[in-house]
Each structure stands twice: as structure tokens, then as C-alpha cells.
Length: 187
Length: 212
Image 1 (cartoon, one colour):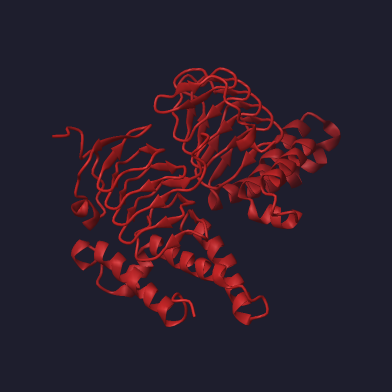
Image 2 (cartoon, rainbow over the protein chains, first blue to last red):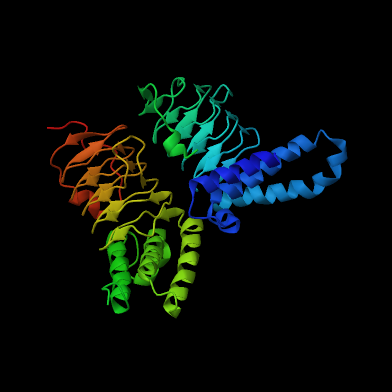
């Protein structure tokens, strides 16, 4: 979990080259603060199974509660613990982001007002590595997004997205089969 | 002396408040007092914070106390525009005249400029594009009406008097006076007078479903 958070910070520092100072980076990036709460919560879920870490739990659960509530109330970034987010997750802007009940690979990034959640049947989406998800995107339901795919802003997913594709529109359709999103991911 | 300093900036604040009062004024179930307009409109706070941040960008002399005061105001203004107004407005966005920014929040603006008399609703996002050849930031013209849930991305110009219907995703330039709608957007009407729309804050669901 620590390694995952370090990867988040590195990813964030890559995105914003102007802010080299770590304190500036943490204070100016709302997503990093929300991710800190999320990683702490995931680590606590992991620590529940290790008996030698049990003394930490009564201290850290209230801390997690405060941090996550802070990110939720002040920045409206909801990263639920039921989501499985890989290392190097990047949240560029605050606001209306809710990530619940899904599996996200490494080095993904999401925009503001994005919904990633389970559908009515309770199955969440599975998202591969290096996926760029734009603002106002709606990924609700058991859809699979291949590695290196790009979901444009405002897309509403109704089908699976193959690897490396670019999809736009409502309902989302694939417009480019092999779209190179390394530029916008800034990897 | 830049025009946006001192008394000019104060009169700009008053002009903003008057414009907001004209939209949410006494005849529209609001109050005729400017102070009440300021208290009841988050968008006016956002516009005020933006004016301060834009003024701070012009400060170049680091030795002057104005620079430090401006910097402090800018940090506080950014914090409050995120927590209270729930919006992000890039400091280099050029709002020369009066413009209506939403009270509802979630207005992420990376536009290069917003023209006089434009009316923007909440949950709108103006920013960079994904596709090649379109990287850049949009320019919003004068007297534009933009509905809620809109995304305007790329180096494009929304012409004067254009109308963007709710929930559109605009990736190309809109000619003056046209109506765009849909995700991705298409132009449904070439000539449309949106002055009736801009006079109040009511959201019309679909004004151009049957083009004549």
C-alpha cells in the first residue's frame, strides 16, 4: 500500500512538473489527499488479518474516517474501499468523482465528475492499465475496458472497450482502434 | 497603469453584482439589494475570487507589498472557490465584462476568455481536448448561453450569441448565433435568438428539436 501511494505521488509529480516541492504538490493536489485516505483504508483492511498490527487499528480507523470524510465533504472525491485501485492513480481535479466497486489497473487517470460504479446487478467495471478517463464520463455496469484505452470526456459506456481504443459519445462508440494515449497520460 | 486596478476593479465588482441582480433580482423572487445578491449567489463569489486572482497574475514586482497581499488573497480565494463555490476557474481566463457563473457549482473552467453577457450553467467543463490537432483551450464569445452538463474541449471558438443546449459535448467551433446539442454535438439551428433564454435562469430542455 505504501508503494502504491508512492507511485501515486510520482505520477502526480510527473503530471505537474512546475511543482517540484513535495509540500506544494500535496497541498495543491486534491486527488492526492483523497488517495492518501483511500490507501490508508485499504492498508487497514489488509492489517485486519495480521494480528500483530491490531494495536494500530483503533488509532488508524478514526484517522481514516476523518481523512475520507474530509476528501468527501471538501473536495467531493469518493474513493470507496470496495474499489480496487492500482498504483499510480491520478485525479487531476476535484469534484463529483465517485469510484466504487470496481477494479482499476496501474497508471490510470480520471477527470472531474466521473462516475465509476456497479450497475443494478451489483457487478462493477474492470479497467485495465494506463486507461485515461475524461471528465463527466459514466462507467456504470459490468463492462471491461482494455489496457491503454481512452474514454473521452462525456462518454457513457454501454459496451466493452477493446485495448488501445478511443471511445466517445453517448452511448459510447469506438472511433479509433489504436489510439496512443501516452501523451495525455504523461507517463 | 492597467485599466483593471484601483477604482476600475471596484466598479467592476459593482457591475458584476448589478448583472447578477438583473438575473436574480426583485422581479425574479430575489431582492433588489446588492448585498443580498452577494450573499445569495455563489457564482458572484466565484467571479469575485477570479477577478482577484486575475489581478494577481498582473503583479510582476515581487518586492512590492501589493504582490504579497495579492498572493495571500489568491490562495484564500482559490481555497474558497473550491470548498464554497465548488468550482475551479483558471487564473488566466479572461472575463473582460460581466458574465454569469453558476451558483450550483462543479464549473471547471480552463477557457481562454469568456465574453460579456454570457450565461454559463453548473456542471460545465471547459478544457483541453484529447484528439490531435485540437489541443488548446476554448474561447467563449459574447452573449453565449451554455446549459448545464456541457463539455467544451479543444482550441475552438463559441461565436457571439451562440446557444449550447444542456448535456452537449462540443469539440468544434460554433458559428455566431447557432445552436449546438448532443454528445458529440451537432449544429441544429443556424440562427437562433437566445436573448429570451439569457434573460432568466430557467433551463429549457430542448428548444430546437424540430428545426423549421
